[in-house]
Image (cartoon, rainbow, N blue to C red; front, side, top):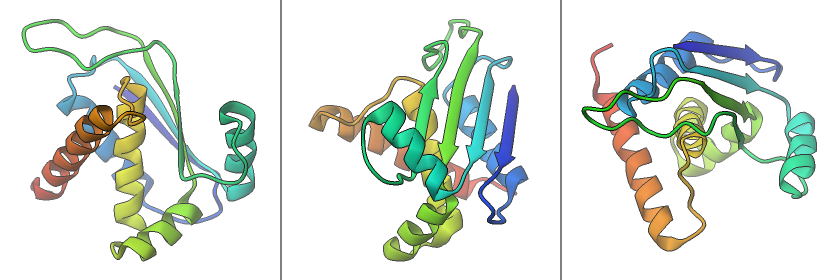
Length: 151
């Protein structure tokens, strides 16, 4: 897998750890081993511009997902599709505020947003109650497995 993590946010965080998390999630979701993913951490002004341009919403958000080849999770006994998974754009400063409010801190919030964004890239959504239950259930399972793995 090709996972590129770019930090243009002005805040320090563990880029290698984020790359390992993304690889873990992609492996768990049976994404093709040659799939490509780019994660870019940006400041609030940049994510606000992207949010307005692409989502027609005002202000900064926490994560934006831009799928490329519409890859979907692999199935057991089937070869996964090759291609580019897409791009994630994260705002660590927003994650910091949200992590404090949730009581788990910035790193845990960045983990959550990364998993959430990858699931969006794989076609999951949460607009409808049924979709929400599926996506957030899977997000929780993946985060639990990530936290429980041996370092």
